[in-house]
Length: 281
Image 1 (cartoon, rainbow, N blue to C red):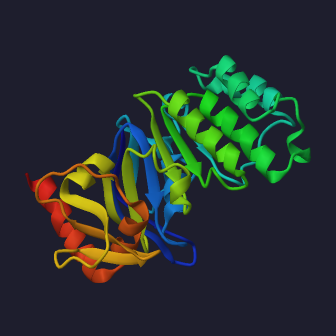
Image 2: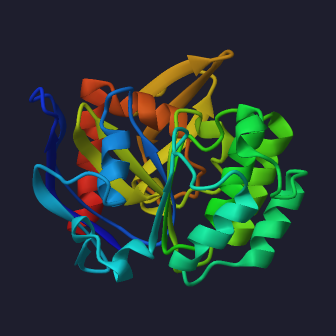
């Protein structure tokens, strides 16, 4: 369990990246959404203990991450596109680094690499960006950390590799793990998401399980606008619509429509009002 208690973060130029963010994030795979500069990367760095919040605290299993205690750090792994690795190859990295993660699974690493057509002996510096990303993702998932933070993990991956990553995440993630994926390309992994974390201009709009959102909001497509719609947008001749889910109907979540609606002032007000009803029940 990750708990964010009144977190704010200011850069040295006094620009405010996060503003009084509070949330509880449980097990499962969560998508983190927000516009460029919304504070997503800052949030991931705070969750991993790489940045100290200006105010507030981030707790993992009730331990403050910033204290960087061994029992906390061994539960967290953060992978972004610019992360330096301590060795020339993934296999060498695993020999000197994986010992800090007690649940590391060597056979899972080998299986993940093989899915991408890699052995782990390739020089990371000589790999293309996409193949380097495959190697790093294979390693990140094999560490089996309780909290796995991924920043734009599908960058550089081709279509088949994205499908492989989706399969790997489904197979390698266990029930007690929390995976947070910050991304702008929603469709790549949308079948996996158990929860949504939405940031806008440094403020947290929502952090809720997908299932709970869909108990209050109905996502569907129509041939014409609906009078009861909270939000509607036209794509390819159809209206992608969000309405109150008055009868508890089952629906799949339209992440793009939800994102766009939450960045529209009036729609956001109506959506948050509907979601508040759920928390008050």
